[in-house]
Image (cartoon, rainbow, N blue to C red; front, side):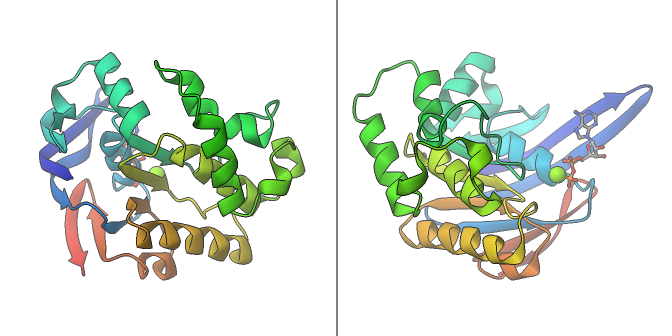
Length: 223
Ligand code: ADP
Ligand code: MG
């Protein structure tokens, strides 16, 4: 599903060049759960942003199934992102003035084609993750764990082939983190391809493979 070939990404800041990704080769098969670990600044978020088509590599190739993301312009990349990729962030990124249901429906608002079944899907997703009773509430009325589960429902609305999560439990207490982790593990068990950045070895232990980054390179792979 994912094929990265000698991917490089360099940031220029002042007179300095920062090699955030320095020759990444990575294959992820459909249905896999891969964890990414590494010290702060090692390139984890940059890698996830490349996988999520939020960012393009400046060298190397990224294929998502048949689509060569690395060769795309911004519009084509954001179209792929909308249709094929779901993204979960550490800080949830829910809009405070929209209800939980409206937040979950946001990806539909951004997509080009109207999909009449989206609302039904959103309700089903919220039910499945135990938030049916909260769907008309504002994010401010939910706990951190509930917010992250709502953010996961939103990421799943367009039935993405690939779910990406950047430290999804980083802002949660241990009980909520465990809830979110079991939801992600359940989704993967049902076939969802999942790539997740984490600092937590307990979370990484649930993955089929853990990739360790340092200075923009893969330095170790644990199966
Ligand atoms: P991690 O998520 O592992 O902490 P990042 O991928 O965020 O690491 O960053 C990798 C390196 O790239 C770091 O040295 C960081 O400072 C640098 N970097 C990331 N994003 C930018 C940016 N937008 N502009 C300049 N440097 C950046
Ligand atoms: Mg990061």
